Image (cartoon, rainbow, N blue to C red; front, side, top):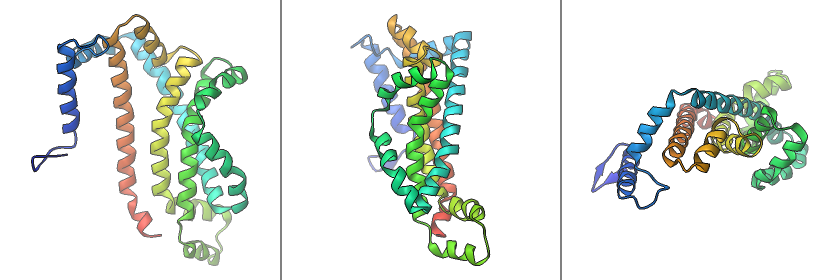
Length: 250
């Protein structure tokens, strides 16, 4: 960020928005937006409580299983789509359909099929994350230099060797980009699942605080969620930058 010709640290914009938030909260324009200082004080107050810790554990469990499943399924499927024209033609319309469709509308169907427990929340989380992972993995494979594939064949590499030693590593920058965006979408999926399927985890806290108009508590939980999402996204972006040399070698 640059201001009056001076380059400011990357977090400067957040500090400026935080100051503006504090000013708006202090002059009490709306009860919906309490001062930022009050929100952080509330976060310190509830951060060590048993309900908050249990909610964090439940949300982290559903998020971890859902995103892990999305990666384990999405990356191989995307690689196969990029590698095989027939598989690509069969699956690409469905991937594009689910990527653009309002997945929230499928939540009642998941509730009927899988019940109201953790399984439905995990599947909802995976559904939000998997499609962008598939598309990015496919895009990465399609950019691979065919000379690499021909070289592997000339050295007698099996299909499994080609997938694990050529396609995966050459497509790794795009795969990581898809995983990063998938993680961000998975945060939305796990909260929607916990709000609509079973009122547990952070979903239960959002429901409790919103219904009782405890806005400082509501924003405290939301800031924790935003912070965790931001940290994960930045870590994956760092990994993307670290493997950029794979793209230059294609």
